[in-house]
Image (cartoon, rainbow, N blue to C red):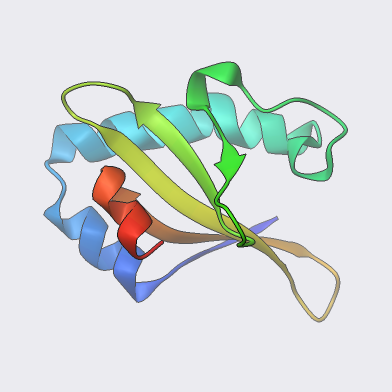
Length: 103
């Protein structure tokens, strides 16, 4: 699986305090990526409950919550398929609940 980050994600990430970004990366590496490897994105395995992964209404964009309280940590992403058939995890936004205004 490949990973891509949008310009919005990179801008958001640069604004996060380093300790908040570290919390995000920890959630991704310890919980999200193992779930994807088990097939959560295809329905073969469940998403980790602790991340509250869900699709945003009427979109192909997923949301995850990497922290519930100070900081309110949210990120949005979607899956794309490359020309060679490889799945791409495309990170769109990272920050807080306001990301949902423009996911």
